[in-house]
Length: 297
Image 1 (cartoon, rainbow, N blue to C red):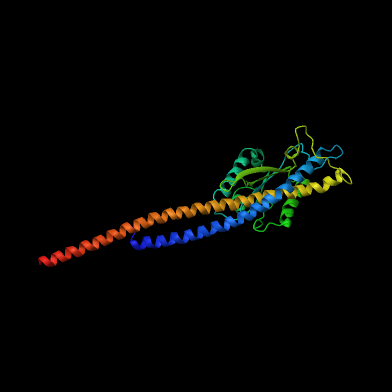
Image 2 (image 1 turned 180 degrees about the vertical axis):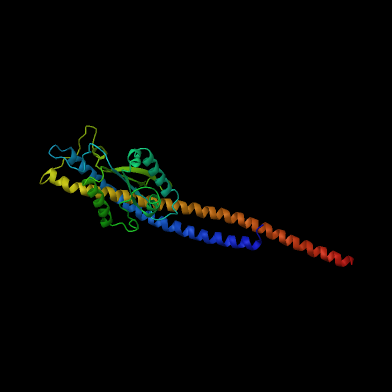
């Protein structure tokens, strides 16, 4: 049975843990606010790039682009898994990895069983998980989400585009967390390459854009510049959504940990008081019994 000293030490430890989780919650809340601002500020630009690319794809004067057209046979597939670099963020990483595993065992099973599936983890948690499995990891990045820069985005984009163009991969899929609310991020998948024309936004029911564009010098020249821009913006939006989801999940997890520590402190304090009262009662009984024995003697 635990002694009063043991319970006092445990209460002290729980109080210290509560202070840490409370501080981590405040830090995550501050980072979440900044991440949300960046994410929301990037959405209008991303939407306009979608609209522009969709208009170019539908233009009859535009010739075929190798990054847009589907290939006849899909021989090799790459799955990009965007996780966090750290834990302590609830089910953020575990749900992502579970969905990635489920996707590998179902939609990508034919390529996974034949060794034609590569995993490209972006984030240390995903890398640590998949490197222990029998998957080939040709590319890996970590530490880019703390200070996301255009050079980081372009390095990932250039690797994916280059390996798609040279035939290493016939399809590239990205799985990540999309920010819906602070409590529960949503795991989503995007086909990065080839670009799916039906996924482009801004097309009305008749299949044409309401806005009318004039392209100079010609649509093909504009398309050559818009496609890399679109892919960079798509990656940036996915990264920003994942970063905001991570901070939201960490804030919620630290809030839950703080509340659990509070409940545990209440229980430990009650137990400590009960043991202390029992010890005092025992001492009083011993004193009274000794006094009675002396008076009778």
